[in-house]
Amino acid sequence: MPETDLPVVLGFETSCDETGVGIVRGTELLADAVATSVDEHARFGGVVPEVASRAHLEAMVPTVHRALEAAGMTLADIDAIAVTAGPGLAGALLVGVAAAKAYALALDKPIYGVNHLAAHVAVDQLEHGPLPEPCLALLVSGGHSSLLLVPDVTSDIRPLGSTVDDAAGEAFDKVARVLGLGFPGGPLIDRAARGLVADGTQEAPGDKDAIAFPRGLTGPHDPPLDFSFSGLKTAVARWVEARERSGEPVPVKDVAASFQEAVVDVLTRKAIRACKESGVDHLLIGGGVAANSRLRALAEERATAVGIRVRVPRPKLCTDNGAMVAALGAEMVARGAHPSPLDLPADSSMLVTEVLV
Ligand code: KG4
Ligand code: ZN
Image (tube, rainbow, N blue to C red; front, top):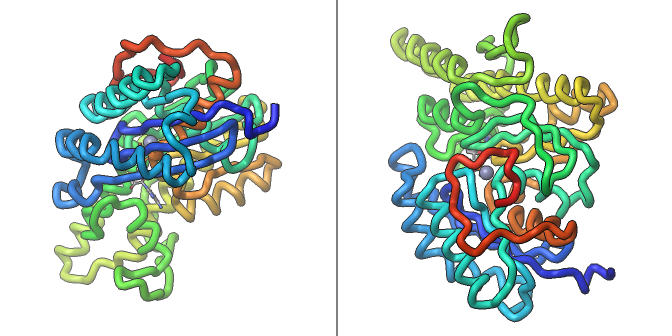
């Protein structure tokens, strides 16, 4: 079928603080409209669920209109609806699921309630074409750090390892707070480590080898594919406190670079190990932390050295968005998956093994 005849899918994402509405036809991205409430959470140093839910409610309809406008379409052009059913913040998910049901009902189109983590994997199809099957996915975001074997992104996702405490993005956010950098912390640490200071001037980058922060769960008796970032976060906080007590200035760029290196060293090492153990030669990296410049560079370097190909979507598709949900929905449609019932629930703790409600 020519690409222009494929069904057009409207995707909704509201699992955290981004209201995302995307439009996808096949593996072609037609629109990716995102409204974020991140500024409203900044003074609390983390996402406040009730604030996020209210912001989704206010942003939803204008964001749908923006997406349609960007695609040059009207609602009459939509063939199917996809929505993040979970995991995520319960109240936030409910807004997206309710909106998606309303559009599905009003347009009399099928609805697909999909898993947020699977959508982070599927989005790469919009940039790099069909996913190799199987592929290995490293998903790193504010809520998750997981290694997944993905034989089929629409129906078969197998968890190989995950974090036992903080997610990687959470560690970035907490360390940024310790360093007084702001929220969300990931991009700010990334920039500080590269020597990009707040006003945009470029200084010398931070030294990633300045401080030897601990690498969690890398001992010989530790679970080889699980992660732990809480000890690292505490180690950074203790180091900074000791420095402040001594009256010496805190070398923010060096701390940022050394902390970031400790995270991405472990992430890439374990991801490559998982690829080797599963006999898979494609590593896909997704989720907000996949926007990290050092993670992208180190993954590429280490994977290439052992003949593994890395696929990472562009940063805007790594952080939460509606296009990723539409991308997974489009793949569901293409594979003839059975739509979800119109009374599908939002499931804040949806397991990654459940790809479609
Ligand atoms: O996937 P995402 O947008 O939302 C969740 O599902 O959590 O991920 C957000 C997380 C935040 O913790 C943020 O600090 C982190 O991704 N992040 C980054 C970068 N950009 C976003 N972490 C490290 N480096 C970045 N450049
Ligand atoms: Zn996410």
